[in-house]
Amino acid sequence: MAFPNDLSDVVVFKVHPAIGVARVAMNDDYYVFGHDPGNYKSNDLMKRQAVQFRVFAYGDNHVGLGELTADVMNNLNITAVWSAKVANRKIARLAGTPLGGTAFVISAEASSDDANAGRLVGSLPTFAEGAAIPLGQIMSTGLFIPPKGGVFRKTAGEPVPAFPAISQTVADTTCDGSVSVRLVKDGQALPTLPACIAVAPQDFSPDVNPTPNLVDFLKDELQISPSGPPGNLHNQTAQALDEAALKSGTQRFDPGFEVCFADSRSEVINIKSVFYQPSQDPLVDPREMRVRYKSSPADAGAVPGQLTSGLCSPWQGDFTACVGYWTENLPTDAYLDENSSVIVKVFRKQYADHSSGAASLRTGDDFARHVDQVGVVRIQNSKRIETERDPGDDIPGDDIV
Image 1 (cartoon, rainbow, N blue to C red):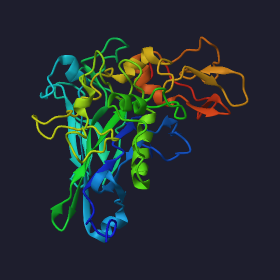
Image 2: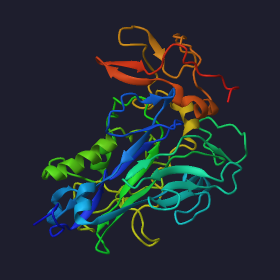
Image 3: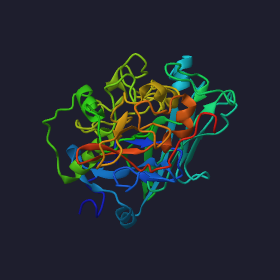
Image 4: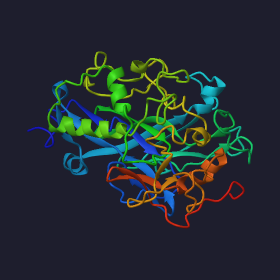
């Protein structure tokens, strides 16, 4: 006998994707990354992007044995409780709070079976709007749902600053941290390796991946051989989940979009120090890109919030300067439709204004209130086309909240 009929050949269970990227939006609706949502908007707003984490069994020599599905768990009498521990350290980094400190850190942890149904809620006690800052939700199925977007101010009503005025008084809801699952059979906990979740801003051009992207960057930094053995079907399935999650991630810009590694603003100077190292942990495959979060202050690895702390705070203010800079995620312009030669500004306020000087989202408050109302740029017949925005879909001015 062997997995999935019993656990006799199982050495460890691992959560995949090893690094998931969720994306905020002001919409109640969300879709799950990796599944075509049909439309990326509903209610005239961008949908949030959730991440479905899955569990795979591994045997000796990192051999993939298969997925631990709900049916397999039921047949083997295994119970699962999912947990997440995340933080936003952006203001803490700006304030000089050490990695071991808690001042100005927006942190939260939750389990899928707790009284709050896995909702992650942090706070900034000195902020007028900081009593309850949402950071996401971990579900009993391993689904991580990101929070809504938005900003939380130290002084109510203060404007969201434009780039490069990085703020210590306006917080956002992005974060990073660990996602883990506690597997129990016959009263005994089974060995598992957790995953990482990074909560990032929206991707307005989902058909286009950066070049190079986070997969390329991390393989190079972690010295993962491109010619290494692919492994069996189960290894390949898990690895495909890992790489797909990172392909939309951008790392060639300073400070980055989803995470911030090894630049002048980063709290991750030595990238290898926050990843599991195969030479130090025999459970880690040399082909893996898996973030290690500290289990204790003396442990090696990252602290929640460290991977995203070097990004702009809040990200909505960063967009005032960076529309079109992250061209894969924030395209400057697109064709009005597939059959048109008219090029429009994607972030224009008036749908019918097709001029090169069209009034566009510009201030931090503009982006905080209205960024999810712009269209979605899709690739159709090799053209960047504005979709999911129709005549009359106008964006209010700054004076309308």
